[in-house]
Image (cartoon, rainbow, N blue to C red; front, side, top):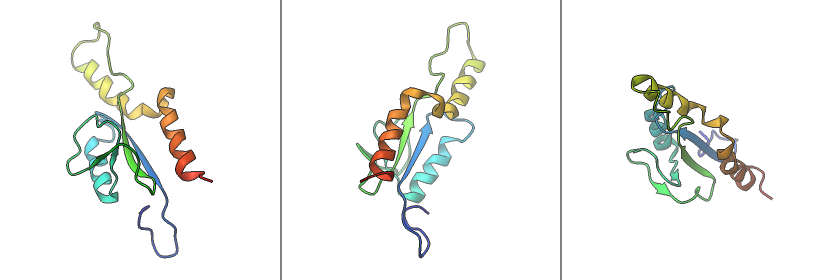
Length: 116
């Protein structure tokens, strides 16, 4: 793993990004990954992750998981019912496409990957 690699390899920082309500990679998979790698939730939790601690920032070694809202969070009133809900859940998998979330990820890279 990243935090405790095989002999001869260096530990590497790890930021997992997670879309709340993702139905392609279920949030339960993120809970398992967070528990296995001892990743705290960084910032505001958007859904429950049992046994995962919440921190205001990544730990000193650069480990954490950050929650993001689905891309389609508010559906127009003309989209009612199950289709609208499924569109929102599936869009949680596309969080990488939203440019407004990139500053968080760029900050992580600057602080932990390309640090001076």
